[in-house]
Structure formats: C-alpha cells, structure tokens
Image 1 (tube, rainbow, N blue to C red):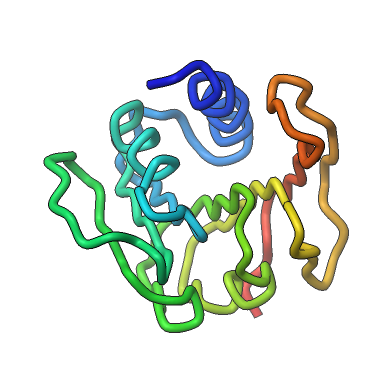
Image 2: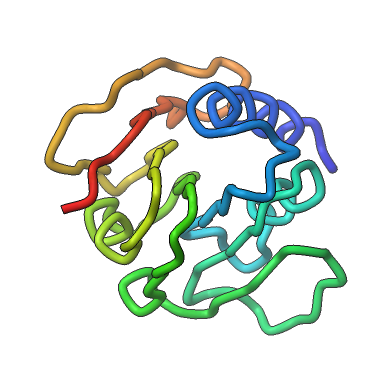
Length: 154
C-alpha cells in the first residue's frame, strides 16, 4: 500500500473510530462510493477492520479480489440500494457521485456517518457537515474533508 493511502486511511479511520465504532466491530458497514477502477478505499478498510466493505462504482473493472468482507458493485450508487439494519459509514473519496443520491441509496440503517473528500462535484446534503478541515497529507488541491457524524433517516 503506498503512503498516500496509508495517510488517507489513518485520517479516515480516526474519523470512523471516533464517530461510528471501533475497527474491530463487525457491526459496521462501510460503503465506498466512486471507488474507481480498483476498490482501493474499500479494500483498505477490509484489510484494516472487521467491517463489511462495499465498493460501488460503475467503472469498477471485473476482477476477483481475494479479500475477506469486500463486495464489489459495478453500478451507480443510485442503483446500489443498501437496506441492512447496520451502522453505516459512507465514504466518498473524490467521488463524482452526488452525495445526496448516495445518502438516499442507504436506508433502514441504525446510524449513518459520512466522510467526503470532494473533487469537482460539489458534495452537499440537506444539512452542513459537522466538521470541515483541510488534510495537508492529501497531496492534491482537493484536500478538504467533510464529516457528518450522524444522519437521521427520513
């Protein structure tokens, strides 16, 4: 794993640990929206946690990864439809999917937290983030991190 992903995971994991549950808890599901051709973000969470990890991207290349708790979904987040009664962490790292559509695709959850690092698509929902900061360890001008601690289901 290269240093960029180690640093990103450290920061994302800190947020996830603080606002959702510990990384050894099987009660957490992470949904990585816009993961790209390879499921790097979801795979990182699968390797480093006991969480069920979903990578959702219409550009995912079909391939079998021998990674426990990693599920690949080659589709848009609007077509994904997650309906488990779980604690969910929605992660959007430079995702081109609209955040409001991603949130709408996740229903029937216990708790939903969001971490978004937007790029060229403005990521917004019906309330402001609980935390906004710039992560200087992300070597990109698009290094703003948005965190919503808990989203109420409508």
